[in-house]
Length: 286
Ligand SMILES: Nc1ncnc2c1ncn2[C@@H]1O[C@H](COP(=O)(O)OP(=O)(O)OP(=O)(O)O)[C@@H](O)[C@H]1O
Ligand SMILES: [Mg+2]
Image (cartoon, rainbow, N blue to C red; front, side, top):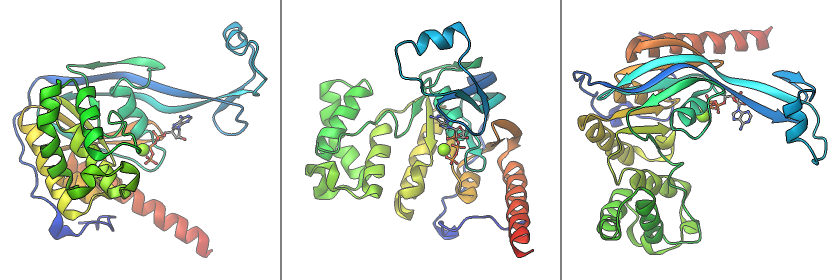
């Protein structure tokens, strides 16, 4: 077997592998999704064009000329169906379109073309929990809970549970600006799992937590999956993806290059990354 490219996780800290469960009905259907960013004023990369259409002229009316518009395709014709009870890892090198895909499925980015159907409102961890640094952890938990649709009583009840999960200790009563980035991301994770969402999306969020927090988060993800939810998990840590997911999608340059069993896709991706690393170090030597 090939060696995993994973420097940050000690194998003995990894959770037990998730058990496979029979799949439920579809929860997310993505049909030929394209997302193209329009970058104003850029002059390199993508397809650059002058503002010639009536639409372009209309939207730039009265604004200083910011130069040509560059169209940067980030997701190109991705299609897949996710089911209840599945946890799906998303692999791909930097800039391959993973975060863009998650944001589009979560409804935070409009599709340039193609369609996304979801059986419930997906919750993208860390984005929905927009925390306010000047407020205390306690206040942020309350705001986060309200934003997730809890009522005042439920919010009050959730504070001790969330604080305990995030291991805040006395920091609960201090402004978040005094938190380390790891503490802030633990709190974000804890807030986003107050409610058990039907579709949970996690984008690299566990990278800053320490090993024991990762174990706890994995247990929480498993709980969500048990309740027939769907979990999407973007991570550069192949070992975490292998441990937490049953299926993986591999995206490269915005295109879906593999979709299947987590081990098969992770092996193929690992071989690709190692091939690239060897090729680039060979080039340097020459
Ligand atoms: N707001 C934006 N405006 C213009 N281009 C963007 C924007 N966000 C991302 N891109 C571009 O879209 C492509 C995909 O980016 P994305 O962030 O989805 O990649 P990623 O797979 O999440 O990368 P990483 O592993 O580094 O997080 C990249 O080429 C990136 O430069
Ligand atoms: Mg990303």
